[in-house]
Length: 162
Image (cartoon, rainbow, N blue to C red; front, side):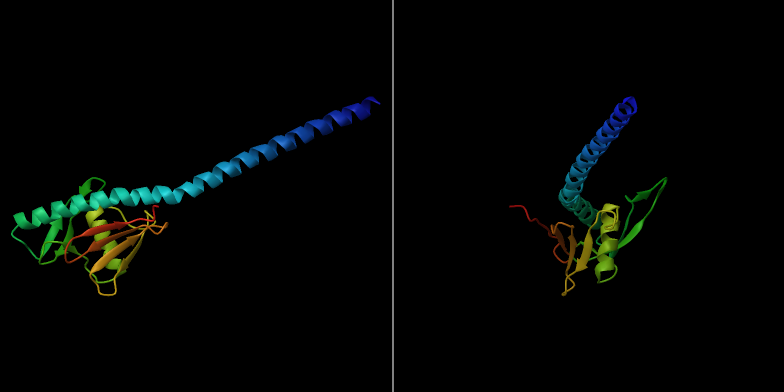
């Protein structure tokens, strides 16, 4: 009889541990789904911040372009990697706005890096050049879009907020 009670006690302990593990896994899965659901919103907030940064950088580049006598190319030196400052050579339009070195999506990616100092891949952005070749678009994974018009220097931020 005691062996039966002992076996029942062990079975109840195992059952309690199984219930605790199931509850813990349920809690972790709920937290995981909430975390991964918010990643898209976080990347969209990053695009909002980059919109403001891009406006400020374009203003500084235009001011430097005017101060240097309107050159066709400029050396940008605020991009730093570790201890040494890296200089980027950026082509300029006749209106004083930075242009990509290539008229395709890879040129837009390179321009983003030259102006803001980080690549589009790490920010989960897709770069596209318009069919006319006059707008670089940067698209977040939630379909928010930042468009840089190469001729006029206008930056347009389009969002899916309701």
